[in-house]
Image 1: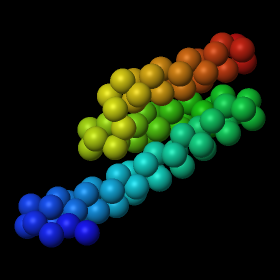
Image 2 (image 1 turned 135 degrees about the horizontal axis):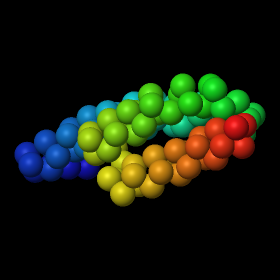
Image 3 (image 1 turned 120 degrees about the horizontal axis):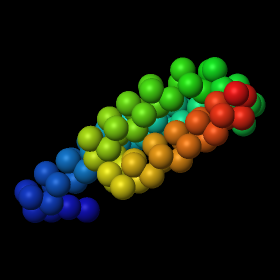
Length: 91
């Protein structure tokens, strides 16, 4: 267990950060899961509606440091490609 003042403070900070990150990641995972289920169901209209909100959630998580910037860009790119492919298949 931490004994020094600085270690005690750092422990408190890490607990608060972990709780914040867990909240952000939970919301993000839920949004991504909804979008992926719409894509797998072949529902292009719903997927197109969900994409902007999901991208905003990914950006928010990256801004807050819950995920790395490159991971955010990669995830957004993959999801957008799948939604666009679904829209092209319907057309």
